[in-house]
Length: 293
Ligand SMILES: O=C(O)c1cc(C(=O)O)oc(=O)c1
Image (tube, rainbow, N blue to C red; front, side):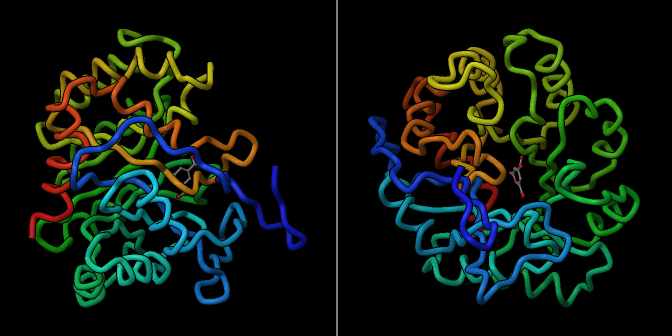
């Protein structure tokens, strides 16, 4: 694990390998983050981790090396509800990044419009207790009802609270995107209880999307992530028009098991084995959600 003299942690490799898989033209890394740089964009006082800087320059260099063209930058929990670092990343991308914000539910319509102008197209609700202090469902629903046209809600939760969250998810009046598939136990296989519950959620509404992401977080086996591939490939095949993919760089909280980003890209052709599936996963689906205008 790499911690600097200020106790700031690095959760990403400085030497990612070049993937064998070549993404189709226009491929979107639809789940990544930026950390800081802290001198310009300090972390939240409530942050649960203190990372080293992982700013837009590093993100865009990785994007190019991996063969991607666009990023969707998701506001990381360490920046709380101050979206300046994410907006800075979008602003510096020459139109090649859009974002997902985290907001105080009391945010005004004017501030939401500013986030839209800055390239945000959704907000994220985080239900992981190790990342946020509280997740007020009633306030979340209030702001979900006031979003700019075309926005969606990204939700991050773990499989053990999916049933409890169902009434809340049912009540969200805009499309939903589920981070990391709601963290199923992939060792249960494609027909395990967690995947069945997740499929039931997807079947409940046609406008629920998911990120087929994070083998590094979800695979007990680790590389080459055979358990993840076995559980997730059928989901991508069956819900091909609703699947997104992303690196999750700089892999918050993964300092003890830092993944190789090239290795993550090489999982793509195993969960999306045909050119048609790859085109949907990496280009058509994220473009519909994030670059509709
Ligand atoms: O599982 C995590 O630790 C994690 C954290 C964050 C964040 O801090 O925003 O985002 C993610 O997508 C995943």
